[in-house]
Image (cartoon, rainbow, N blue to C red; front, side, top):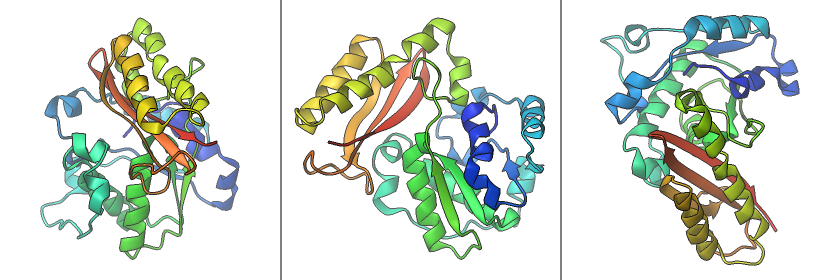
Length: 252
């Protein structure tokens, strides 16, 4: 959605991109995936700067449509369902969000018809939603490539929303990554439910308003049955009125 940072740019610079003859970027602040009008209004828009960055790293084409181009009057939304993924974690706190994601991604795939689709792991649940979309819809796109989260030096996951944090807030936000690593360090010795409670309390003590702090199964994002399974910690929390999300794989 623009306001590009190194996390976005890394999607075009990964060695696996050598498979591609043409690199295609799209930038579109999609109104259908915002459930809070003020969040849509405040979302950073830096198209000129974004275009320059993409040119510098060798992206061949940029598609930056307006709302009317993306959703003309005769446009009909495709039928798809993401099941429980629309109701848990991000889906629970952002009703309709993943439907909006599905609509815009399906539209982009329809218009561009790429061979490969690259996404970042920071939006892990969104990656799983898009993987489900590719299974349901008949697009020529062959592979969804999910690349690791890119972080600031202090561990904060790069995000366009970080631009809205103060310098003090950016440093304070590093507590999310530190707390996630604390959970990872204790994953083999403390049960997941207790770890989640304690981790949430740690963030709240730092001044975060925590929406969720949950340990789930890596593949399904359903509750983890025991710590011998591959887990992932997923976090959403507000700081300075800015909603930050992150996740970290857990393993014994």
